[in-house]
Image 1: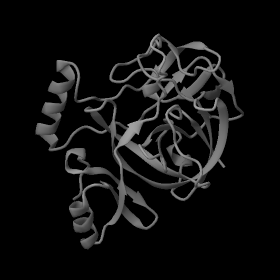
Image 2 (image 1 turned 30 degrees about the horizontal axis):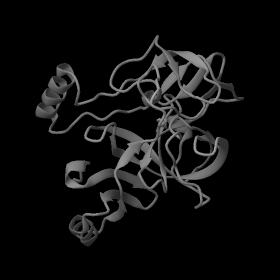
Image 3 (image 1 turned 90 degrees about the horizontal axis):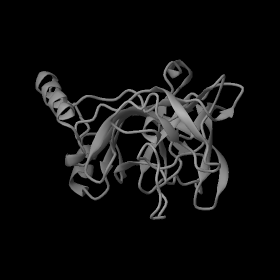
Image 4 (image 1 turned 90 degrees about the vertical axis):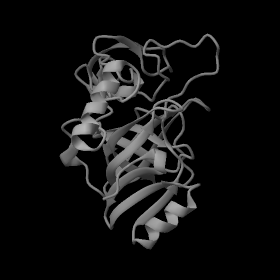
Length: 253
C-alpha cells in the first residue's frame, strides 16, 4: 500500500475517476519509473506549499504570524477561510486576525480547526510519536478551515477553501468546508475567487475537481503536515496558483 512520505519523494496519494494517482517528486526519476512499471498513474510535481502572501516590506506584521490570503465569503456573520490563514498548529479561536489585506479589515476567529502538527512543541512531538507507534503512520488532518466574523456576503456558503499548491502552481489543493463533503464530486466543476497580490486584482476562475486524497503540505521549509485535500485544475491553463490564493473560496459551478 502506497503511503505519503515526502522524505521518500511521495508527496500525495489520491483517487480520481480512473483510479489511484501518485504525486511524486519530479526530480526522482527512479521512483517515477518504478511506480509506473507497477501500473500506477504518476504525476511528477514539486513539493506542496501553503499559498499565503508575505510582503517583502520589513515592517510587515500580521496577528496570526501567517501570510495574507484571499477574501472570505459566507453570510450571517460567518465567513470561510483556511485555518493556516489565521494560525498553524494552534487553535486561533477568539483571536483578532487580518485575513485579507486589501482593506486591512481585521476580524475575530469564531471557529477554527488547528493542524495536528508533528513539529514544534514537545506535546505535538510526543503525540505524533505515540500515534505512529500505535498505528504505524502519522496523523492526517481532515480540514484546513476556519470561520471569521468579517468577510463578503454570498447567497450560499462555499464548499471548499484553497489550502496549498505545488510551487509551480499548475493546480490547487482544496480543503472541504466541514459539512459540505456531500456536495463535492470528482469530476465536478467549481468557481473560485482569488486575490492576486502581484497585480492587485480579484480573479474569478473555474476548475475541475480531479482527485481526492492525502497530501504532504510544507508549513515551513522543513516542516510538513498531512492533509485530506481535493485536487482542482484550472480550466484555463494560463491560470497559475500564486502566493495569496490561500483561503480562496470555491463554489459549485
